[in-house]
Length: 200
Image (cartoon, rainbow, N blue to C red; front, top):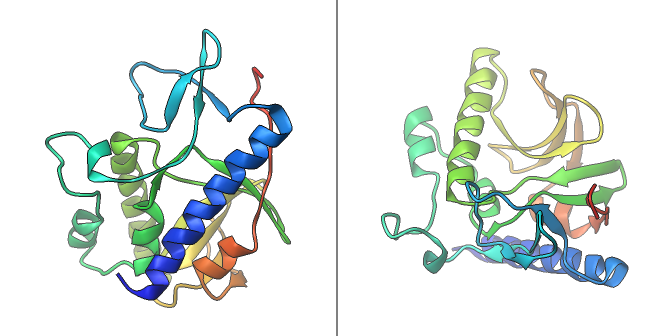
């Protein structure tokens, strides 16, 4: 792992921790999510009430994965399926933590950082990334990988697979606004946006 990747890992861990701490400061407890017995996650930390559980982002480790998947999650199968190499920042971002979506604020507006909730969600995420890249290739556009959604419909925030730059793009269109030179720089300038769940 390069120093840049280590920096991204630490940036993600720090940001998710900061989000939890600010949520506790504002509401007196961790964020909550509707509990689903069919959609369990290592992020869940016990019941808040009859329907909701507390949750907190957790670092992906081999202990959190099922027995049949002893190695840490990777994008090897995605790269093989598409015959491309994904930018290391993309792989590091999605394999650092299990987490619910984290609301955040940047100079351009509000956004939700996307993460895998569990191993099955990671697989679903991979399928969505494959679909996104295949669409890009079909449209003869440079490959990007989304990692956040915005409060504007069809506007996503993505990483340019070649340069690692962070851009805003409309689904199906070329990226139109550069936000940052790197993912580390982008996340370092975000602020957690604390919103209460609907059933709080």
